[in-house]
Length: 468
Image (tube, rainbow, N blue to C red; front, side, top):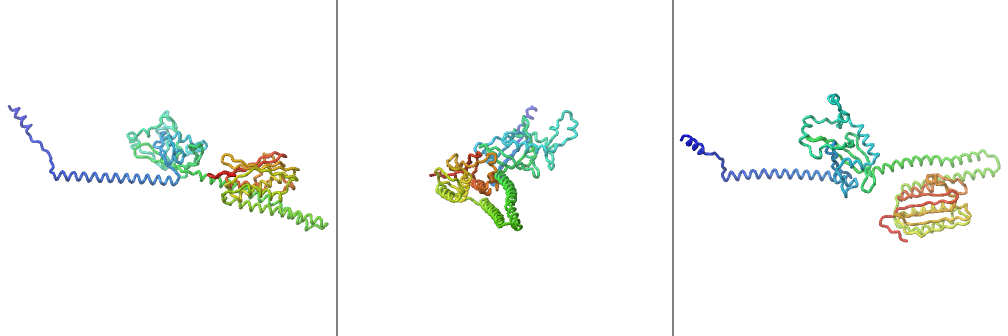
């Protein structure tokens, strides 16, 4: 039948196939193998470059005591924080949550308010004609956060973000606080951050905006530890203020004895009276000159102590105090009956020269300011408390009003100007600086007419023992 013949002819049509000989197959396999090897080598090279780059960035940030963060979407809460950054912020052992909100919660409130206000001032407002005419459009909806020197993504780029969004790039359901990591010249952010131990430390953040080809705008930043720099700045300001007060005090207080010398010298020159009066004026001149010399000597000692670097070594306070008491009894103005009682003292790790000046001054003051009593009692006490050596000098002398305690440690400042109790107002100022140089503190307390107590607190050297 014709139909059957036609069908047979179709089925019997030969199918054309391509077959490779043995050599051709080997050549193809070798070619593909070479291409695969080249691709693997390129991938390994790129991976090595990425690792090298990560290593360099890690080493640089660690050397600079800094760490990196990334906000992958300003409209979202996610904030990537590197391990190095968590370490310098004080959370290296427990890590930090990748939340912008929680990051802001640890910033000092004063610094956060300042940062938010500064960010709001620098945020440009770009209003389009369409947004202005669209009913119900809010100001916040018209606001974008692109700096003046950066361009907004094109509509094509914005449209392409739809396909590239991930969970991290999606906006947050809750309102996100203002972005404090602004960019541009001179926009470094300095703030105090609360660490795991409950202490605030100073940091500086520098940020850069990055707009990928697909996806939302990102913020990439570096945070550095500047706590030590801030402390040095505070110390420098304190030293400058102290220097101003010091210069004013010197100029003011040294003028008095100089004026006395000049006036009495002029009186002697014009005096034609008895020799007794001339001798009296000469006595005043000598007293003023002696006082002026003591004040200058005190200034020199004060200046020496200011620049002196303590040499910490074991000091036998018991022996030192015994010698100082003996010298004071022989030289210092004192009451008819003087009783000095003291505790036993251990070997203390401190600077021998500096601590001797402190003990000598406090002992001399206790003896001098109780010299008007018929029976003066000076008590010197010692005890160890919370890794501090506590040494106190108490007397039953004229005392002072506690409201003026701070004035005692200022240069040339004296609460009493009684001629029976000599002094220049340099001793306690010198004690204050010495104790500060030894990383300690000095406190004063008193009751008018009932005596005074000066308490010295010195840190115990780490690893040292207070042996008697």
